[in-house]
Image (cartoon, rainbow, N blue to C red; front, side, top):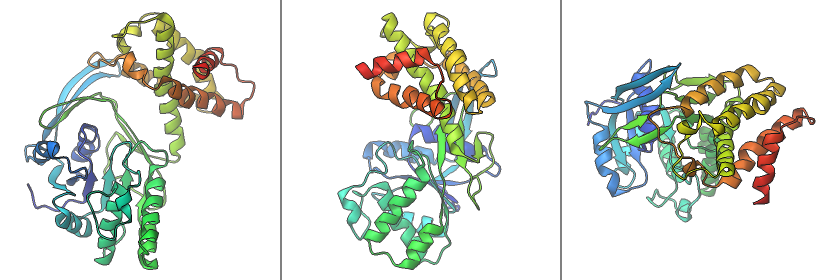
Length: 369
């Protein structure tokens, strides 16, 4: 493990991060060194944690279709130079955040921001949520007289930067933080971002298999710069446009396919790429052409939607990804409401007379369940 300074401190060890941010920071201009932090304290992941900091790096296998051509290549990630655990290395972690960090990024899972009873403690505890642990680390950095830094949450939470900032400030006030500390926390840059990449399987002990498509979209704000320059990292004026494309084309497309699959009484083993060339795929392309793209056109996003749809259909056709419709069908009724219902509401707020008979029928069936 290297003692070289690491300007990036990352909370999370998932295979998604391995094939996403860690790869970008390894390939970027400039490359950035990372301290990876395991915040769960799970001893079963200790082998992965140790392997991540191997000077030889670890593999990411990129497999799929890009611009009509099959891609099957291996890249190596060499950005991770130190690994720590909040359960056993708190003092070292506090030093790294205080003395080295310029950027903190995280992907701590669906419940990562959820408050825990231990969050009210005045000293850091392994039982605390990620925002509470982050508060204690930032408080130590402030006490050391260090400048504010940039925080990039990557959790799949809308306005994730604003949500994390609000939670950390809430904890600071509960801790009776002094006004100077609260002002300093407010001076940190808390970035809203959206991430996207299908990472289909792990490579043991560390590494992952991922599709060619990858995106880390970061919403612009004064003073904010991307963590490194990389083709998959974009600074966007408004993150909502990117969120709408993903939710109402990629995610809506998955949900529409499941609805058509249900109607057809499809096999439990049906895979997305295999149904694209049959009746389900034809119905999907029809609804995209006749209802989804016109909906985006009503919102002055037709060009972006057509480009994103072309990329999405390539992703669906990935010959290396066995993505079962039965897996996508989990929580189908809720997905219909969030993906299709929200799309129709969004479009009809602009154009009340908008016609979408197929999507309306899917929504009606979902509401009746």
